[in-house]
Image (tube, rainbow, N blue to C red; front, top):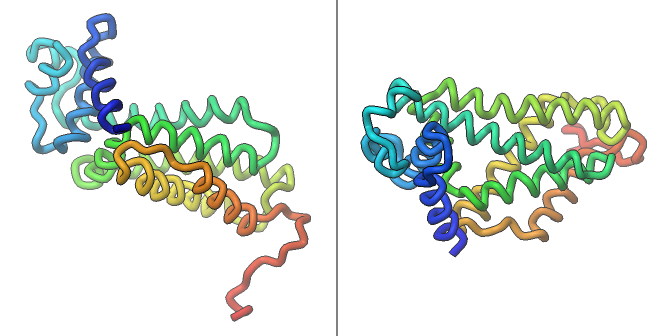
Length: 218
């Protein structure tokens, strides 16, 4: 049901004549790439879904590859904007910031579950954009980790970039499992609670007294 509602909303947005043509093209392309794949979607189909003449497409994008790259960048920008907005409302500690960011990420993914398919396909269609997509996410996460380390919420011995990619992987696969695979379902609160508990135990504050695991402990 969730995926069906999201799909209908996406189609309406793409065809909304009050939206700028470029935005209508991007919305139409995102929906079609996610539903049918890059190779099974044509420029003519994108224009038809957006309610725009095919000849007008090239005033905004130079090719199908060009709009695909723009779709990837827009998805990434929307995710980062959603998390930034959530952060501004979060309490000033790392556990609260983690909860706010993951919830915002998961909720947007539930509204647009097809974005996982688009990003996966980008590895082969636009590999530079695929890499940049994850690097942009990880860069923002790493900045947050450095702040948390300075505040004593995460042990400073951890490499911020390593933790950033840990967040990236957790968000990607938890979201894929409960948002994409369940057809736009919302990631349950209990799943988010489990995720945060694992982070709290695995990324303890500096003064928590919890010993760090060592391979020598085995």
